[in-house]
Length: 198
Image (cartoon, rainbow, N blue to C red; front, side):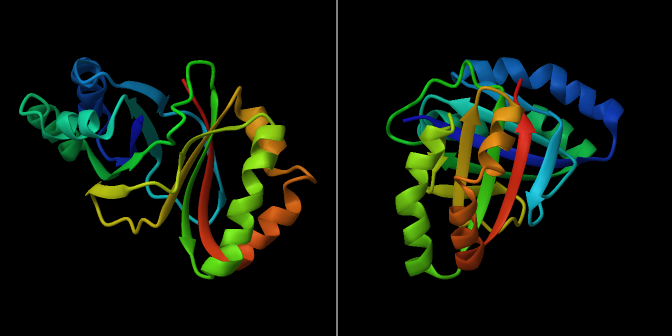
């Protein structure tokens, strides 16, 4: 199954950061990865999200993503990012169905801190049908996750892909989703971002 590296960065030195932007794609590609989000316009619709720039990289497997992170060739490139940003980076596994993200240009990113697991399970049971009905596809949904850099508190990571950002809003603000949103809000503290893909 696919895996996703998610990075939330505060860029302190844009001129130095440009070197990172230039150098990192080739090493990502070496490990079979590609960007699905790279600095797109976003809105935090619930909770908070660190940084002022978001990137999400899709890899064919969790191990490939870890290989990218630990590749000695990546170390000097990562140092450019460390010099120019403050970063929170985490890794999450994708869903088992391995959906194709090529035509997805809008994304919902979530870190859900579950507080009432019994109530949250009622949400989790019902939301996939609504997600599908409103043209969303889960890329990641509560699988294994780990912090690569930073101190961001992870619980349940969700990545949902849509045809474009408007379609994400159509889902999120729909009357169909509203009763489920109320359940989730009562069951968890959620940090949700809607963002343009590449």
